[in-house]
Image (cartoon, rainbow, N blue to C red; front, side):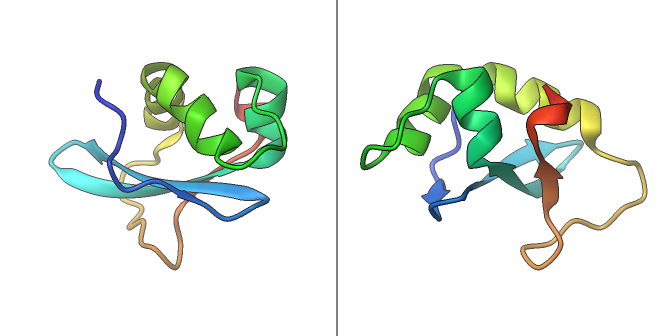
Length: 85
């Protein structure tokens, strides 16, 4: 799966959108998860760089966490922390 082109590093969170079952799901993944599981560091662009290297795995784990019938939105994204990896 290609990495999302709409990726935003918000410091403590990485925000991206991913296609799933004919819709776009906004996902918010913690810096702690990115550091612990994807070797992100604290430098500028570190979360985006780590995401770009492992987008396929990140999307697969996010897809596993999507709950059928839940309407994810930018205000209520799918939230992933270290416990999801």
